[in-house]
Image (cartoon, chains in turn purple, green):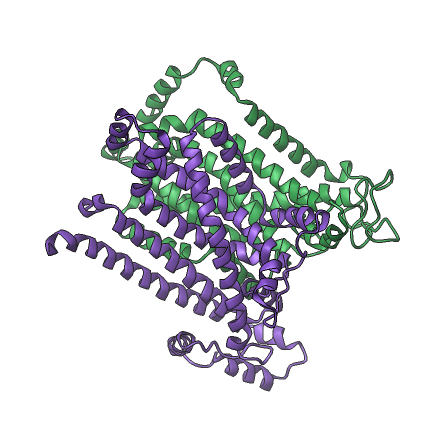
Amino acid sequence: MKSAYSPIFRLIAGRLALGILSLVIVSLVIFLAVSMLPGDFATATLGRSATPETVAAFRERLGLDLPWYLRYFAWLGHAIAGDFGQSFSGRPVGQIIGPRLLNTLYLAALTALVAVPLAVGLGIVAALYRNRLPDRMLSAASLASISVPDFFFAYVLMLLLAINLGLFPTLASIRPSMGWDDKLYRMALPVLTLTLVILAHMMRNTRAAIISIMSRPFIEMAKLKGESPFSIVVHHALPNAIGPIASVVAINLAYLVAGVVVIEVVFVYPGIGQTMVDAVRNRDIPVIQACALIFSVTYILLNMIADIVSIVSNPRLLHAR
Amino acid sequence: MALSSMWRQRAADATRPGLLATIRRIPPTAWFGFAVILLYGGAALLAPWVAPYGENEVVSQTPFAPWGAEFWLGTDQLGRDFLSRIIFGARNSIGIALVTTILAFLIGGTLGIVAATMRGWTDQILSRLVDSLMSIPDLIFTLMLLAIFGSSVFNLIVIIAVIDATRVFRLARASAFNVVTLEFVEAAEARGEKLPWLVRQEILPNILPVLVSEFGLRFCFVFLSIAALSFLGVGLQPPMAEWGSMVRDNAALISSGDITPLIPAAAIALLTVGVNFVADWYLNETGGLSHDEG
């Protein structure tokens, strides 16, 4: 028993180790990027009239007077504990991004709830009607959605659903005091846009996963038994495709990371993406570092989950090495 | 004559019913793509002569003038002619995206081929470096670097090119790896040919179709990234006309049901669809062969 399972555990352990290594490297990159700040950054931020003393004090506040590895460990230790230091505006970074991070997670979770069943369903339809009209239409739509900028979707939906039909509010400015139904109503447009952004890719991958399984011998067996195409997909293909589909879902949720930034700005949604863009405009480095770290960690973790799911769900990987 | 070029010659002879037949085989989607690229290229090159007004010329006293005979698409938030801004925007957006993509291919392509031919430690170090850079989401990494270095045109080009070069590296390395292991390369190595000769005469010609087709797709990606960054207000800075920032600056019009701000966004989409069609056709026409061989 143990010998049969140990290779898969070794694979998973290897993938976990790789994930942790990339987390360390990413945190190091994000941290060191700040050390590459051009020399006059302090002067540039404080203005030309800054005295040498204020510049020195500013550098000290950034911790630029200590050796880099000490600063890195101090920064990382605090960041893991949720303390990202002081923003340049004087407020603690944690206080700025804490509630907004929750909002973004809420948005992403709702999007996943809508997009995942829809994408998997459409992917199955496309695979069933392979190279026929529904499939052609779906693949044309997915080419279009890959080519179109995210903000185009956002504004088209805003124009059609919010302004012409008056179904939803144009802006998704939610406040903590609102009830959940009011929040949901205001978030409808961003959720819909994000769904469109990730739908095509997820659908295409689901289609590919199902089609690759449909070419296996056991599917042919089921066909020869005279089962209907629907029953073949639901009873034979789908159970075997769950692993690949789960990993597709995880990878595509990682794509949400980029989509969320643009969509939050369009709909003025108080999330962490918008916070990061504002911080970039004001060059508020501690806030940027915190946001970049959160986004990257999410991205790496989702990719790692995708890989582990596909390792666990594919028995043939047992013999991969 | 290099062995590989004889090999390619034979392959070409086998599949060469003449240029005319190739042209006749071009599907309508690719023709559409060519037409779009030609139209945009023309607008970009001839902008000062085609555009009715100057890029930053304030032509109307009132901002957001409606569509009309004088200003076909109205004016923007500062009273500049919208159509002229779109035409000049083609020049800025396409020019910068093109330079960025070329730079990304120079960096990523060179390093990828070097990694595949040198193998060993060089390959290990370069590949691990690229892996770790790729584990940060593109947009987030770009935003962070722009905040640090500032959003000038030069910084934008270099930052996006370096991040995009990681993708080019992967592809160039993988396809060069396939070629390096083929017999004619080994034969050339055995003859004592030097690395630059190997790369120029044997490797590059054989991976070029894949790289050219990828160039189209990377260009689309870079183009969309720059538009997104400008839309967020951290890409190309005013008063430069850029499609992403034009959407942002005129977005207020949408709440009155005016579709003008959507035009630059649609222009972006049309170009990326067109380039995708052409790249697809090109890959089918040339790449299918080298894929099978690899």
